[in-house]
Length: 165
Image (cartoon, rainbow, N blue to C red):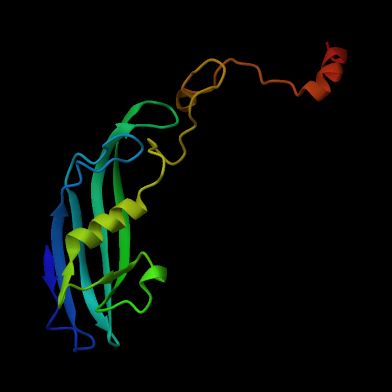
């Protein structure tokens, strides 16, 4: 979707709002495709002292398998987006990943929002931020409670352990 910005490019304080959805079902994250629902994108582009600043949010529900505990999950995610829109880049080799080129007087929201979503995704898919994972010995899901495994004794203290018995 191209967002026309011609009316605010030369008008400091001008605002152009936007709302759209993205289909990212084919995007792969962590070996899977957790984005099975549309991504809702809302925000605005504001001319702030001659600089076009895009701010917004990306919202969807992820469906996947947790990389720590291997359980299926569904989790809502919301990512903030802030990007700078420019007509030309002074140094393309050192351009910031949050700076995007305009296509004439238009912003390519599909490209900007897809890039923002990919950059915002965690490298690991987790059912929750505080997922405890699986016990390395017995394989119990530690989110469901502690397992009955005894902790390993550091081999340097094995002789002291024998004295305690």
